[in-house]
Length: 164
Image (cartoon, rainbow, N blue to C red):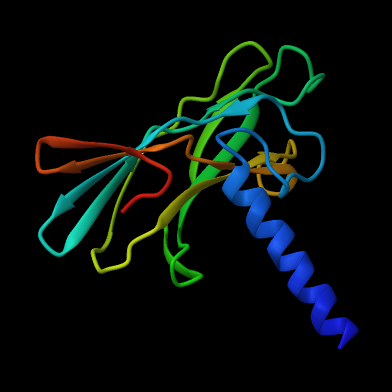
């Protein structure tokens, strides 16, 4: 009984932290990440699908990372169906190099998910700062989109807390 309660409490706390992250480092932070922010996702209705687009996060190297050297950064976009509590999609890792004064240049994300009711998609960008070997992460954080601009074709329907 206590084990189930502890697991439920941990899951509820993690879910709340992911939802309330609002585009800055949230509860899933490990290590000593550099500065990183993300912005608004655009969700466009296209038939039986929703096209989700979000700019790459603005990510800088870790503070004090080998001065004058570039640190390799990577991120991927993960889409969670909050209405069902399931993973709806995950993108490929995008990589770039950054310093503590110059952000990494990485590609933006475009993904399609199924349009069904109810829809309540959350967009999370998993960001990792890599060791000098370029493979092993030394710090991580999850960034949630700050808001969701919903469009039906070219018509803007408004800004919401979920992609729907």
